[in-house]
Image (tube, rainbow, N blue to C red; front, side, top):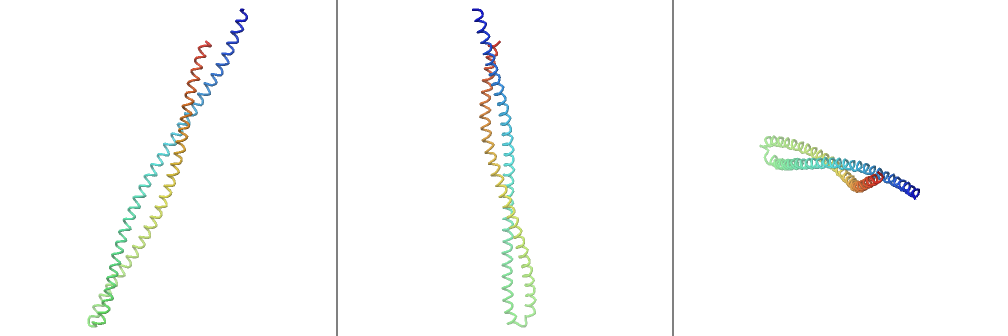
Length: 203
């Protein structure tokens, strides 16, 4: 009877030792997984913060470009108004030139005076025409600037969409990692509990 009892005790100790070994391996594996997923979660959160910063910068750039476009439109409108007024002046002056041509034919006595008036008005026409050309040049420059701004705006929108897509991907990874972290935290806690329980039994 004593020999049988000792044999049973040795078998029980061997079984408990094997179980404790497996529990300790499970506990270590669970803790390792918990640490790795915790690191991954922190990396994901850092990436999301960086993307948010980029998106904020892009929003500011978009707002600045919008202001520039508005100012550009206002400047173009002002120049166009000036151009229209100058064209009206050109038309009026040319009409006066035509009318005065008829006066030259009808009033030979006043021809010299009228010719002087014509010269002055022609000078005005020349000056107005030069100004119109200058405004046309400025309008072309504003159009070119607007084209560049719109191209830049399109680029920013593309980057913004790309950043949003990345944020969406990282958010999905964050949810996955958080889920796995929660799972392995539970596994780690359970493994530690079992390990502690069997450690007391083995003692």
